Length: 177
Figure 1 (tube, rainbow, N blue to C red):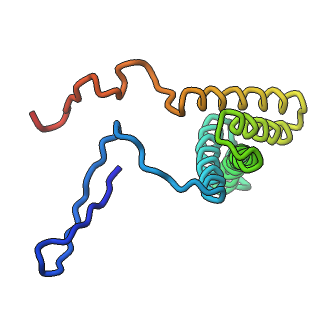
Figure 2 (figure 1 turned 60 degrees about the vertical axis):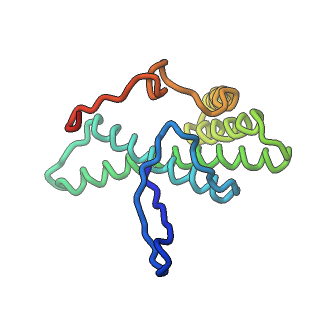
Figure 3 (figure 1 turned 90 degrees about the vertical axis):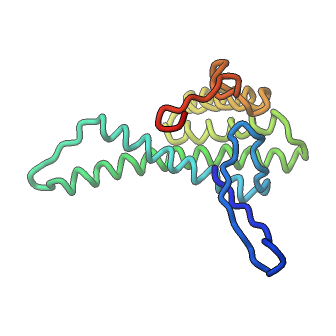
């Protein structure tokens, strides 16, 4: 993450700017905490993740190139798969964020339960999309449990010890000493 630092130089009214790299181990910078921002961010990131997974699915599926449709037909089929996945993930992510924000608004608390409500909302949307009540209830329970686990850990679930904890010295592979 690169930030821009600005300061006034000398007494002549000059302003200088410098790009500074932020250490990823530092505490993250504060983000806006309003409902529109949170839901919009969830929608955007979920759409992008869904489209990416849809592209992977389309790559692994057997899309036929016919003489009648040609490559354009195959490309449109790939876009359809990507769009389906993007719509599914986007709606589930938006429902999750909206459930979290609405629960926080009604309960007037920020705690584990809000994320669980969001997980239930996201899971139910997945159930509606799949056309199965059982799947929706299972997905709701799984997403609520996963959200609660992340909240209980303080939002800092990490990989194995020694990975990005600053205890292991950095190695430069290209250039430098």
